[in-house]
Amino acid sequence: MIDIVKKLDQETAKRIHQSNRQSNWPSELGWWEECPRYLVLARTDSDKMPLHEISLQRIFDEGNKQEKLVRAELEAAGYDIIDVQRDAKWKHLNISGHIDGRIKLNGKKPLLEIKSCSPNVFQSILPITEAEELKGSKHFWIRRYYAQMQGYHLLFDEEDGMILFKDKSTGQKHIINSTLNYEYCEKMCKVIEEVNDRVGGSDPWPVEMKSACKHCPFAATVCFPDKDFGPGFEFLSDGEIEAKLARREELRSIAKEYDRIDKELKGHFKGRSAVIGDFIIESKEFERKNYKVPVEIKAQYLEIGKYWRTSIERLGANKETE
Image (tube, rainbow, N blue to C red; front, side):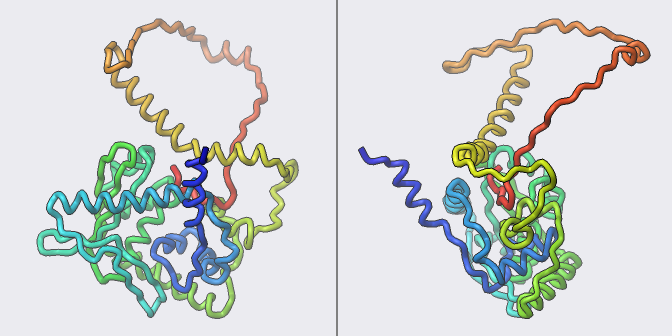
């Protein structure tokens, strides 16, 4: 029998490629604050950027599908979407890219950027109403959305815009307003000018270890290929363990979604019992005994033990999978 899943994955894998960048992309402008060196290397050493895994390609594909679905929903609701996937280039700073579209509203045509995300990420952006607040996100790639939108404002000479987020699990939507920030763009453009100068002179930004390095595809190939991670680190080659680590990354977002929904449901039914469909929910109250002991007495019985805390992170990973 034909392995259908394998065949589908083979088709997905065909779409994995690394583009040769001739210009600065709005989607990557956020690196100007995190590490401008990335912007230089993306132009001069794109061949040193490892290809992403099939799990991330599936997410990219799903994002493209969701963009079309959201646009269709907007049009069905009576909104006029124009300039869909329109390209633009700013020759002065060699920035080029395309927008998802513009939406006609009250005589204006603000920019429209559509983002689909996991329930976990969606919940984190729900309190946000203005794009500038995205810069405070704990998620690296979400912080970059602000610079991306500012790049679009410059490219398309438009002061107003919005980012429409969609929860891929529930279909819920949330809109964040975006406005051209002249002061921010002036600072960003000065850095992009230096990036262009360094690209033209084959002079990459000096290497500097930053927190963003763990998200950067160049970390292990160009910047720190022979980095000594310190005493006690082993360099192993174990295909089975590596496969499990990769699978762990794929399951991360699913596990987070489960924990979030589990916590939400248990909070909803606290003190209540119910039957819904073929689910039975029971909420029971139990006693918990606590012994309050004076601090001076506790101190007499203090013992200090040791334990292991193990963290797992992928080097140079694009973590747009949460």
